[in-house]
Amino acid sequence: MVEAFSSRADGKEESKGDGNKLSSMPIDLVAMAWRRKYVVIASVAVAVVLGTALAWVSPPLYRYVCAIQIGEVVLDQGSGGRKIIPLEKQNDVVVKLRSIYIPLTTAEYLVAHPAENYRYAVRTYAAARGNVVWLRAVGPKRYGAGYISIMQSVVNRIIRDDKFIVEPFRARYRADEEKAQIRLRDLSNAKIFEVHVMKLKNAVLLAQSSLGRLEIAGHIMRGRVERYNKKVRLVNREIKSLNALSAGQRKTRGEALKGINSPERAMTLMVIDNNSRLSAERLFHLRKQRDVALPGVKQALLGKIAENKRAQADEEQEISALRAKLVSLYVSHRNQVATQEQEVALSSAQVAQQRNTVVLQAPVRLAQSVGPHRLGRVVLAAIGGLTFGIMLAFILELTARRGHGQCGSVNPAD
Figure 1: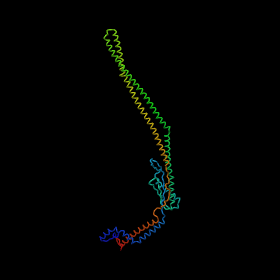
Figure 2 (figure 1 turned 135 degrees about the vertical axis):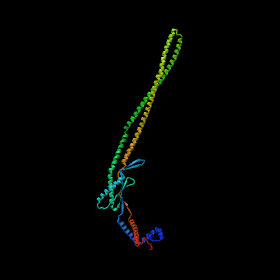
Figure 3 (figure 1 turned 30 degrees about the vertical axis):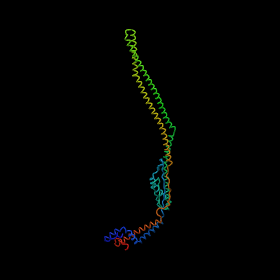
Figure 4 (figure 1 turned 45 degrees about the vertical axis):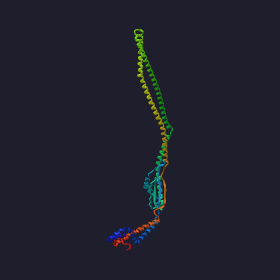
């Protein structure tokens, strides 16, 4: 510090002073304070006296706190989880407290207590967790009753006003609960459910009856096919007999032709020709019946049998679908009843777990005072006085040296 203010022209000493500047600063400050020790002592003494007087005159400050739990609905989410829905947003409550409730309540209290000339300051903030709003104030014990009264009035006012918010929510949840109970009664009504069940059962019986008729018709058609096959066999047998008869008639006619001069043989030939003609006509009709008429009948019967089988398959499929629908009806009804019971339970829980706005922490003055105690204030005043005295000594030292025309500091030994 001495070298910092030195104006010597010797470059070596200047360089030496620059190198020892930082290491010599504490020594220079102590030397300067010692030369101006009376100034430092006077500053400390004045600060201690003023600090002691202020510590004993100023009353201690205390913290006043109050907590408000905003109304909310707690919903069970299953597996032990819960969802909390506030009836009013936390920030909205804070804004309402700061802008309306606290200023209005403070003004009403000052009007009711005109003798108190004190500025009450109540602050509010939202808690980081939970739906809680805190009221906080710092003031002397003398005005503690005023702080507690203002906080209590604020709490009473917000609880009273929040009822107009809570009641519509409660009415809505109660209406939801009643609707859920009505739907549950409708689902639990056995007559309504039995009507749907009987409709499906009747449809199943009708389908089964139709299937039975189709099975009988199919049996009849299969009997007709058997009769058709029997008739075809008879026709073939008759055709075979007629073929054998025709062969015999041709042989007999050949023998008759040899003795055609005889009148008896001429008559026999005429009879044989007539019988051959009748056999040929009969054989023609039988072959026509076998090759044309009977195959058409068979195709018609086979087509009807195939159609009957398809109709039976459709009826069986419809019966299976109706039975599956009946089972699904039972399962769906059971699930709907279970779901509706859960909805009723949830609505009841919403009404039961609804929480009004309440006082979580009543207005109270904390036992521990705010800030340092009296002895601590005196110590802080002494430290402040010491700092001020050193600064004042430095200023006086610098002013004195400039007054003598010096630009640097003097060695403490001078």
